[in-house]
Structure formats: C-alpha cells, structure tokens
Amino acid sequence: MEACALLMGERTGNKVVVKDLALSDNVSDGDRGANFEIDPEVYLAAQKAARVGAPAVVGVWHSHPDGEPFPSDADRQRSHEPGWLWLITAVGRSSAETCAFEADKQDSHCLFACGLAITAASATESSQSV
Ligand SMILES: [Zn+2]
Image (tube, rainbow, N blue to C red; front, side):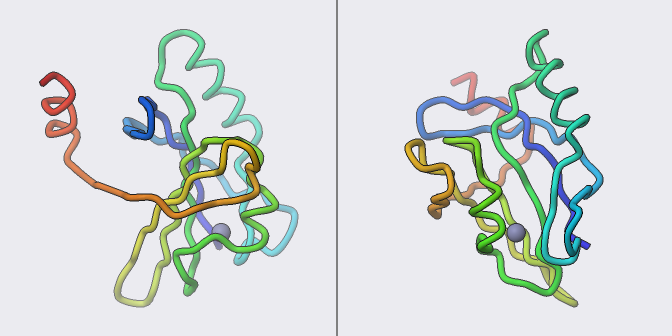
C-alpha cells in the first residue's frame, strides 16, 4: 500500500522548508498499491492548524512500493494545488529513494523535478537564523 502524508512548513521564493508531517491513512477508493489519497479530515485539520500559527501545508509525500520515485499518471491527475512540493519515495526490498517535484503554478497537473536537500532540523534552524 502507498503511504502518504502532508508536508508542513514554509515556502520562501523557490525554497521550501518542511518542518513537520501530518501522517494520513491512505483512503483511496482505488488500488491502494498504486494510488493514494490523503484523508480529507487530516487535510482540513492541517489547514485549520495553519490558520492559528502552525506551519502551512506546502506539499505532499507518498511512497511507491516497488516502484519508481517519479510521478505516475494518477499523481498528475491528483495534483490540484499549484506550487505544492511533491516528495515521492520509491521503496525497494533493501533501499529507498526519494525525489522531489513541484506542481507548476499555471498547470498543477504538471509536476516538474526540483532539487531536494535533506538536513537535520537543528541545521535548518541555524541556517535560517544566519
Ligand atoms: Zn504516486
């Protein structure tokens, strides 16, 4: 089954800093091995929290069990939020690879590859304060 979560954080220009995750059950009506859907209640709760000071919803993460770390046709169809960061982790038997994509601001169904840097939270905090 594909796993999924909302990415919570801050966006500054082209830089997105993910500070937290809102884990969700995969509530897809389709084949959950090849599709995912964030629980609408998780999305609603995250949006409400953001309104009172929590990090904003900046994107979505999901896994591709035994797949490739690239958007599927279903992912492109499901991408409705312009500018969202999409992290996709391909999970193999002995390894996992994560790639980052951004939903185009004009056509959210277009997901284009972008850079991904993973740093410890403390390093992120210190780099932000410089
Ligand atoms: Zn996918």
